[in-house]
Image (cartoon, rainbow, N blue to C red; front, side, top):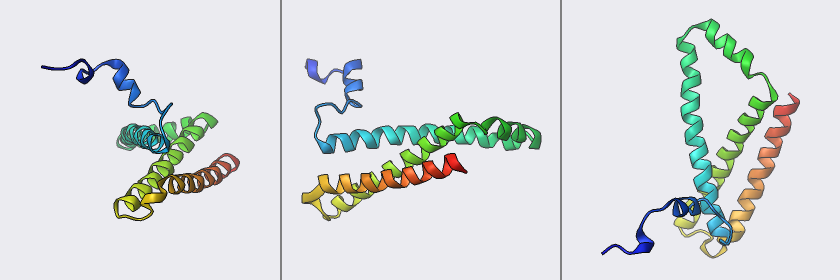
Length: 130
């Protein structure tokens, strides 16, 4: 007999992404989920953009003219941010899986996220001032 708490529902789906009331590990888990979904979306978008090359040089040149605006640059910054946040969070997971800093996961998470944010800020400054 199936119980009520095991049944799928829209609210349970959204609670998968909702970090309020979670501890640091929950926030890290949600961050990893969201960045993974964002990077997966970007992968498909990137493949669509690369298909412009198959349409010839003029189609690709038109696309390059289209992307030279601050909104697109901000989108690129979001991809860079997602990549670094996801990557550094993955490093934390790998380290703790191999027994490194298991008792200090919270500090490891904060330290790696601080490094990621510094790198993202450097990228952002260079992207918008270049």
